[in-house]
Image (tube, rainbow, N blue to C red; front, side, top):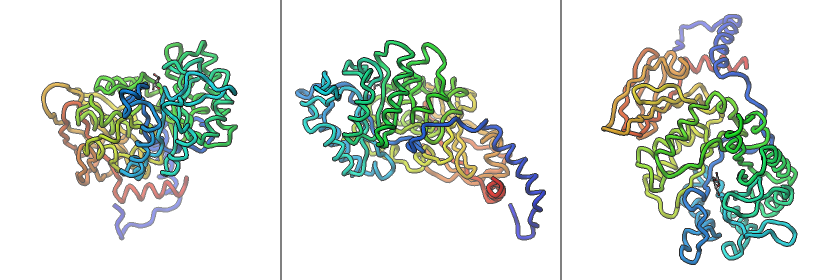
Length: 439
Ligand code: GLA
């Protein structure tokens, strides 16, 4: 703590401190991140809603008019996103996934929406979505067919990019099914990125490129980041704890490869938030929300916003957790360690703050306690010499000031998570302002 009697530090000494501090702070995070797709979009992870996990490829509007893939669904969800607080907390993109298309292209080779299910067409839907202050996402595929068998974009990249731009689309999810070679896959993802750029419209480009490359070789993430705003790495998410756990396991096992490449403009995408559906307990929903914030993941909900419990809604709209996800430092968090079936993750945030998540992976018994030694957090820097710790999940409460050598005891339900935010106290902020002077 700087007191009134302390003398200002001399410039030379300050520089010495700064260099030592920079070394401590900057070196552990590695080299400057890779150059990314320069379309000015996704400077923080994309937030919105995507139909796939909840509504899949339901085209039976006769029998299930409320849950089939039709313009009615998107009009209703857009209306709710604008009126029920979703837009206010940042959920902006309402995204159509597979199965929106008619089975054939039109006479000019353009994709067209299924005329029965989207009688107004995509252009009108986009206008409506825009009138609500939201943005519209759409889906296509780099290969000969989409994963559900609708027309693919192979050979039509420019036409399709222009069609989407003409309609007023703001995001493209580009899948990788039915591509006949890994060369075509890579070329296709690149060509579509360039084609979207040439339209002159700002269109977020959401790829699945690495997911389809992994079975053959390790993807070149530097290259992927140059062309995509986010990219799926791992299998489709399901509405189950097993699926969440596998996604987290994959991410931690591959973090050396995927974490350094994430940053403003380009993000790893662990797939949709399934909070508010059927398969996750309250604690598991908390775990998904907390860890998607730590992973700087796009927050694309796939649920039915027309029928969602107040608890799920409050969790998805939690501004403090969203603030971690959207943190402007733009660094993805990482897995720290596993001990006694507790897993710890942490993420550096702006202003030398940190987010820490502790997951209780034990699926038997009741709440278990875990004691964290504060020195171990934030690469030893988070609470040096002390910090203010706030619990954000499962409940928001200030835990108080913790000294560097102190410990913090938590109680965590099976498959649940405690999410903490650690903030520097004034003396640490002093060091930060000294650093900022010189950077
Ligand atoms: C793939 C994708 C999913 C979804 C479906 C649609 O499986 O990974 O996210 O888009 O295709 O068919």
